[in-house]
Length: 487
Image 1 (tube, helix red, strand yellow):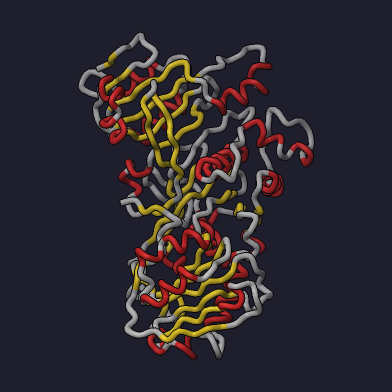
Image 2 (cartoon, helix red, strand yellow; image 1 turned 90 degrees about the vertical axis):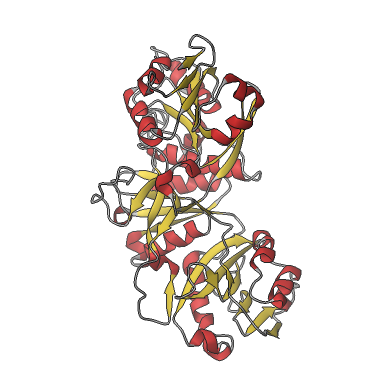
């Protein structure tokens, strides 16, 4: 059924008489074959109704149109279409009242008049996609209106390249920047044309049509956008490369990852906890990692990036693989001075310390193989989750809530192989505003038997450690505020 085919907002239902082909007819001349194929592949069987918002003025496309496309002899249209997808049949009355439309809303895709790819700004809810069950990823919340009706979507921003004003590097940077500006008021919105302008002083030759960016140029764009980026290469970090990438994703920080000839955004990961435990006193949680979730501008959002590329026949698996990654860029907040590789070294040293280490303070953890899970978070977010988690002992929860914490902290949770991935038995909290050479950079060391707290540093004084003996400890939930688990 098509309701209002000639209006500014046609509403099509996928039923016995109308299909995706009828939707594409409504989108002529904006839609092109590749974009249509991508949308259908990702949403076929999920979307049951689509509202076609005609004459939509998209701020990102208008940005590139004003600075580039309008200068062409054969000039494309300055306006776009926006497709709104619903997983249930809806009526115009539902759009007016909003209740049914809000619960059925899957997201939107802007269709721009560019070739060879027409997909502009796109937000598709990952919670509506059954193939992502069990995955952990980062999303942001965007509020929109459809003819006056407020709708809301939680997703990770996506855009495809237009091969002129944007190619894969600019598209990946746009997705990264748009996530941060939507999620956090601290970051401003950066539009496509400005992304290339961020690196104009470090470019050779013309800016448009663009030919992409190097790792160094992408890092510089991140720096000028307000981040403190770190560039990691597989050649430079060797066996630690995959673990460091996992650690930043576990911290809820999307990263730019590059193969030899392509760039995309890593937004989440998925795990296999059926792996047999390995020998050793401590196993990092990255051992269970089975791959990452990526937004690749050549494909629809939320592709799985398997550990090995080119061997999977699963439709939503990327042809790339973790093994083909050559580098990644982590856009850290400016107040994070301790990098992941340095945090790993200082925590390993602390856990083996003769005074504050595991062997000297925790008979229960010494007696069993451990799993360590490290991540970065804000002190405010960590405190906000304390009540729900309990922290294994009322004293720990009370002390953590009362003591001042840095703006950002590194946390290494301690769990047993029997309890992981559900429960923790303790944690090390490290001040992320310090560096790896400060041996007293930790804020707290918590084992089932004791809590050691540096109250001196917490009060901006010299280190002064206070110990609390803990009775009747229990395990407690892992910290889960960095990533959303899809069920």
